[in-house]
Image 1 (tube, one colour):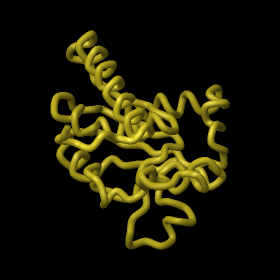
Image 2 (cartoon, helix red, strand yellow; image 1 turned 180 degrees about the vertical axis):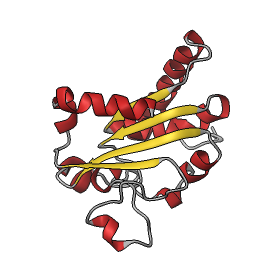
Image 3 (cartoon, helix red, strand yellow; image 1 turned 180 degrees about the horizontal axis):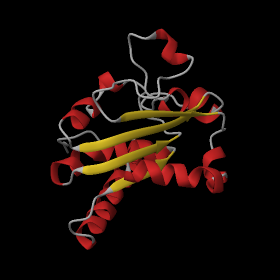
Length: 172
């Protein structure tokens, strides 16, 4: 018996199924809301799912905003497609909420996961970004860092305080 593709390991299979299910959900939301601007807000592993679904999403639907809250995605914008997606208008704005007090992302996120939820978006040539990321590291695109002092669930547990700010990011 031969396979064209290797059989994925259990964790890889779970990630693949989760991404596929998210894409089905996303397609249903877009279909039920024709002509509406679409934004996504996601926390933790949900950010990794969204990031991996974006190539499929952006083939059909431009996004107004994406708000990542403490997510295990790459902190290096130059290593992915975000810069070009923002520059080309496929994504209007991208927000990262991060904290150096996020132990889950800072200490436990190992490849294939990144540490954006700890660092925010970093410019590879600016060492001081690791101390405090620039609020708007690239002035030519709508990419924003929001640094807090919250632990991994802090923003989610304090939606009375953070909710209005997150909603503002979705419509900006």
